[in-house]
Image 1 (cartoon, helix red, strand yellow):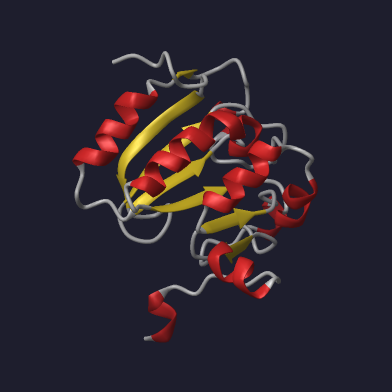
Image 2 (cartoon, helix red, strand yellow):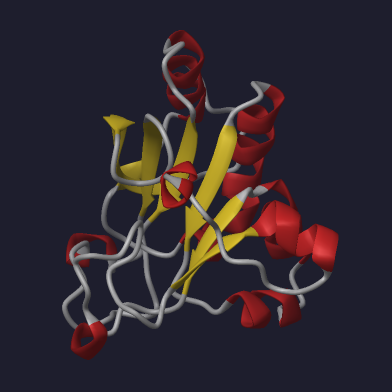
Amino acid sequence: MSNTHYKPLRIAGTVQDSIVDGPGIRYVIFTQGCPHRCLGCHNQETHDIAGGKEADIESILQQIRENPLLSGVTFSGGEPFIQAEALLQVAKAVKAMRKHLMIYTGYLYEDLLQMDKPEVQELLLEADILVDGPFVLEKRDLTLQYCGSSNQRVIDLVKTREKGEVVLYRSAYEDL
């Protein structure tokens, strides 16, 4: 399949059926390239922007379409927002499939909002959940849901946009 009408996207790889990278069963795209280079990062191979491979976006979208069990898609890294323009194409296609979109970032949500990059703002608008903040080894906590260190937040972006202030994500399991 051809990528001729898509902006290039560099990825480290994909996982077609993750149950740890967001609610439900997820298709995960691990982007390539990360400026944060957090000490203790569990995806260190994604740091080099020249590493990885160019994604076949149409093939990825076809894999997502073909799996009826998927709840959604997760963009992880690397740092997804350094490839916001390319990921925006994927995000719009995912949302058109009525799938949930979650994004991991080493940036703080407030810093992303301040970026003068329309593609970053548009990508944020497509996302349902954002896990923000760098991984901090000294604050590592394996008991946290969807994040690795206690400084990171799991933000419900839908409710955040509605209220005009950061609303943390609550999983259905928290009410049990």
